[in-house]
Image (cartoon, rainbow, N blue to C red; front, side, top):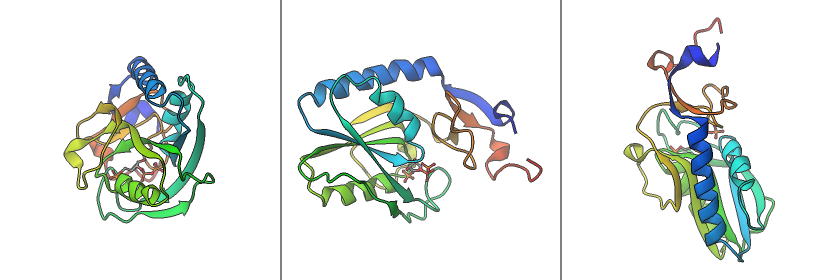
Amino acid sequence: MRADQIIERILVDRETLHRRLAELAQAISSDYEGKDLVLVCVLKGGVTFLTDLMRQLTILHEVDFLAISSYGIGQRDSSGAVRLIMDLKADIAGRDVLIVEDIVDTGQTMDYLLRLFQAREPASLGVCTLLNKPSRRLVEVPLDYIGFDIPDEFVLGYGLDFDEKYRNLPYVAVLKKEYFDGLPDET
Ligand code: PRP
């Protein structure tokens, strides 16, 4: 089904995203100047944000990736089951780690990641999330950089999926309520 058929409205358009990313990149570049920065991206949703953000950083940095299964949590429910599927390649001990995420919703994924990485004794551990849904929080997590606080609506685009698709949309949009339970079978 075409994106325009399932979208209620655009929440953050591409110009606004671009402007905010420039501000975040400037703040991160200033805060991490001279440090041993490793950007850690959580697959899959964070990839779009990471790749746009890193291109605007003016300081040296590395990137690394991990994958987790977050079955039953995320935007629609909250069983809280998080499992590591693919670990980082980098040893982060003594380094300055900044986790880059697309969205913090209940906070359970970020809580898991912070505990996982803290145990590896980085020099510092920070969080940068493009989107934050504070009204959905079940676990309090410290967020150092937030792109946008958003209301409790199902959002897709710019890395965020709906049934694993629509991650390529260049904006963040709100899903029509009639599709909350998935797309009809014929699509
Ligand atoms: C999303 C998002 C976060 C998590 C946030 O991932 O990328 O990792 O949910 O939810 P929480 O705050 O309630 O824990 P998702 O499970 O949709 O996987 P994806 O990134 O592969 O799309």
